[in-house]
Length: 141
Ligand SMILES: Nc1ncnc2c1ncn2[C@@H]1O[C@H](COP(=O)(O)OP(=O)(O)O)[C@@H](O)[C@H]1O
Ligand SMILES: [Mg+2]
Image 1 (cartoon, protein in one colour):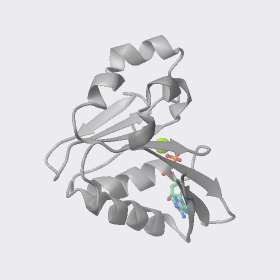
Image 2 (cartoon, helix red, strand yellow; image 1 turned 90 degrees about the vertical axis):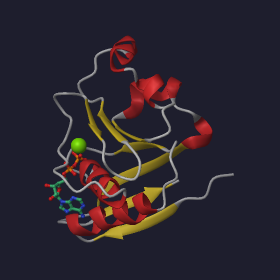
Image 3 (cartoon, protein in one colour; image 1 turned 120 degrees about the horizontal axis):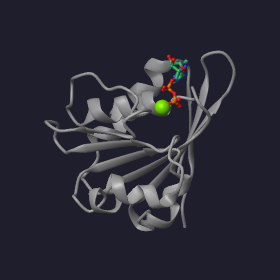
Image 4 (cartoon, protein in one colour; image 1 turned 45 degrees about the vertical axis):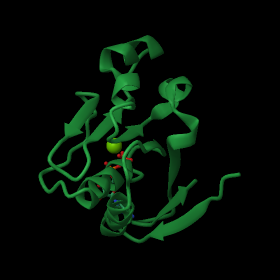
């Protein structure tokens, strides 16, 4: 059975802090499937994960590259954004299935086309909803 936890984040700093706290506790192998509209805070959360893993350099959205990989933290972090992906076949080019077996942490924005590949037991789903002005409701499963 899975239990959902809902956190209200009152600004981008809050969402980043939530990611940071979660990032500190990761052990490797976790896959985050991040759902929510554009601007809902997914990338901000991943920046927090990177910080929590000890990666201190710039973390930007992989909108155009589809994946950014961060080394040099306590665990490697791969950050995918599949928004621009056209078909599930393109996932092979990105090596997503192999990357998920490397023992690092994987975060995926717009994970719909990757659903069939996600390891159910290791996948954590996080849903971001705009709750007015700078408020975001973050639901973790
Ligand atoms: N509570 C909040 N959490 C996250 N981002 C917020 C929040 N309030 C305002 N923002 C702003 O919303 C935008 C979120 O962008 P981003 O994290 O890139 O979203 P996504 O990756 O979901 O498209 C940023 O400009 C950020 O400053
Ligand atoms: Mg994003």
